[in-house]
Image (cartoon, rainbow, N blue to C red; front, side, top):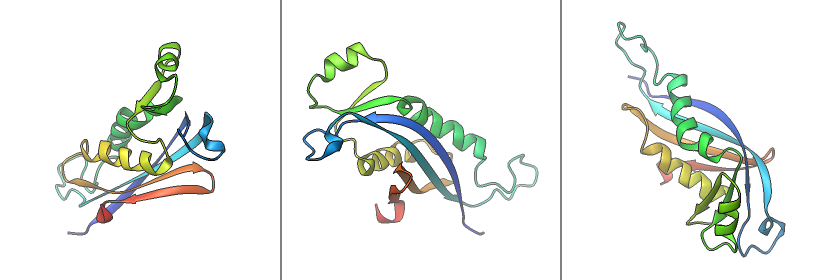
Length: 146
């Protein structure tokens, strides 16, 4: 059987501040994120199955990623747990996510990979995550290296 990789692109808007950072990104600012999720698997060989020939239905992958990443993180403000005024901000505004890590693009990719690996359909594995923070800057996470 052949191993196939499938990729789906997602987009979401988000804001963050990098606590104790020594550049402009220490201020609250936003990004138009692009997320590429790549799964690996073998196409279903069962000709009687409606998903025959698929590693996973792109619609099913979309539901999983939307539920665990896009819906909670779209238009969210991401702050590290030791950020000043985090409780006041979270109380005053909706969709503030307090994280135990610095909300860099790198750390978000790792976090998203962990979320997805725990929620994938049987027969598939997460191959990679590519997360764009700007049109020209992205990070990549590969299962083979983690």
